[in-house]
Image 1: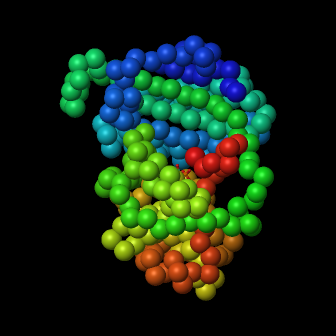
Image 2: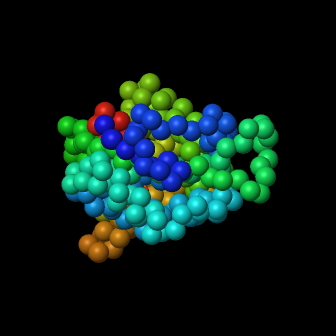
Length: 253
Ligand SMILES: Cc1ncc(COP(=O)(O)O)c(C=O)c1O
């Protein structure tokens, strides 16, 4: 259990942290988030995550409340407080702010609410990469701006739960006949020694892990192609990969 979190400028004991029930994240799902892995107390690819955070904030017109240096300072302080040399996970969430009068529209002077936590990363016993996992295909019922890492994850959660209900561990989402990504992961297939992943689009979250896989393919001279994957391609594939990370309950985040 982490001891402290960061909330709106203060490092607070987790149990004492409080936020208004009129927070627009709580009322409307009006906010964005990032999940940054930490290995042996060191942030991994924080620059990529902060760039994607900026992309998400710009897309929904919330000003970034902190500079890169300030973000890094907060992450480092929380890692130091909670899990200084272990693997952990930084979760950060920015909502548009608190608004007592209920209105879909918002005034120009909103103060975003900022939450950052650092929680322990414990890996599941089973190694999915070698043992394999079950996945099902489901119609992608999300909205059309899936490139934004919004906290409004209802469709993702419903789709993931449906996969679980069907005895699988992830849903591969199909939009207009093409496999886009998982409910919380990016998708790759291998066919005839070529790694294929769908191109970035507004219908997909540009995963940091996806970028790393593309880089590793390039560095290791593995042919990798960014092109659409049909449902039929999934069935013809030699391998299907999903870029999942696991937490201590064996659930994906
Ligand atoms: C819909 C979706 N796609 C892809 C990913 C993978 O992104 P990343 O590799 O940055 O963790 C996630 C992670 O939360 C996700 O929710």
